[in-house]
Length: 210
Figure 1 (cartoon, rainbow, N blue to C red):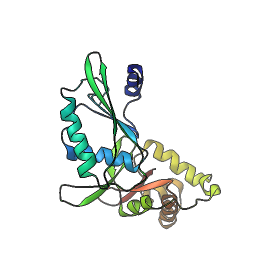
Figure 2: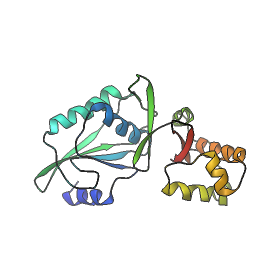
Figure 3: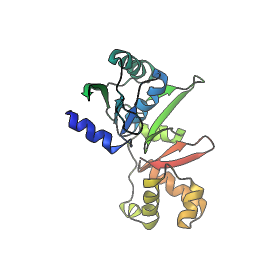
């Protein structure tokens, strides 16, 4: 990738498929981003770039890549392959790590308690998946009625999720003025079709854009 291409990426800001890191603090922490990218749509990690897009550069490519490779090969199950590029911008060293969407989903990592966890990419965040989301990752999407996707309720839902991290059945029911039971059923059907995905909010399940 040309230097101009790196600058264009940075100008886009962090997103579903792009994350900035000034440095890799630990293999454990970066494993979440790698797993989330692989479990969702893939993505690019730029190391040596601050959250606000300022280029800070890295001191040691070997040290940064060592942590990233440890995360990809040892902490993720199954492991993932990475493609990386080394760039110099304004005499500062930036690493570009490319993660493809995986055909071996879900990729799990161990959390601080030693329990396996699946992460998904939601907007510009890495969020733990619910158990139902883990199951949907393992199978082909269920067919979704095209008429349903064009319905006012679903259009309103998808518009809401464009600017919000997730929605709960209760919030969706209120948003489109239907019963919570009906809202939950509709969200479940869309999740099985992988139009949206369940995420673990810690105090219950929400649904985010796939």
